[in-house]
Image 1: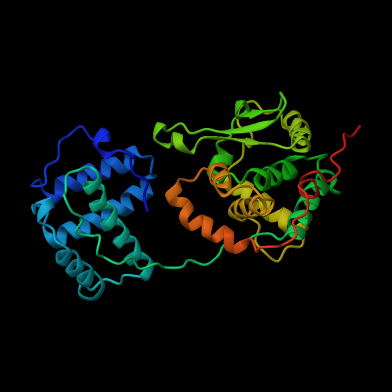
Image 2: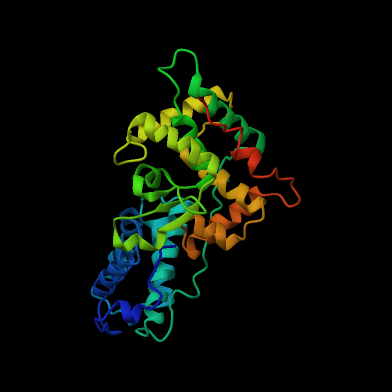
Length: 324
């Protein structure tokens, strides 16, 4: 479900009336999605769902004239009579779009009742993501550290360890990793930390501060000097960093495909198994409460109750002594 403003009335000074057209209401709703910080893909997908509904019901129809029966007929047409395949996942999203749209206008005080309230959602269970086990995570970090002095290399290279240990420790996304600048990492003070920043003001709710281990800071200091960094923390293309993760996975003899996404999910599961509160995990990942509904359920399923969890230093320390 898309993010929406907490208070639609304050977000939209335009006084939309129940008799205004569906076309107008959808345009205002689409703007609300943008202002709430949703990605362009999310906005386009959900707004597209509503435009499909508008084409069926008529863009000039008054917002208040749409009934539950109208919506049920639209969904039936969409699934069986439109002549275009509609997967269960797409159908579920379109139902979500419709329900979110009308709920928005009820909460804004524009509609007295929600015609979509009686529409049943059809949940589609997406497969669980693949994560690293404790032992696999250790092998990955050991392999990454060993790559610093691998035979045939141009010399010590802290980049593999710095990258993969950062991902497993912070759970940041690929785009957030690529966007890291030197000022975003604070190594001084009592607790080293990473600041996730967004240039788009609409995505400020995703900004956050994440703690870093001192062992990572040691490797980062060597890595920063080695590559003479001046701006970006990882000044390579996303594909080059993906290749680097694949190389680490191969050296660790993983049967799985090591990726940014796998590291992110692994971080979340390990944090939860170490006892981090669900809301703290959510904030660390930069997720809204709405997004957390599905993600939190998956993390819970991936974190079996009673499982033995090694202490953090078994994953992140790995004898990071200074070298001559």
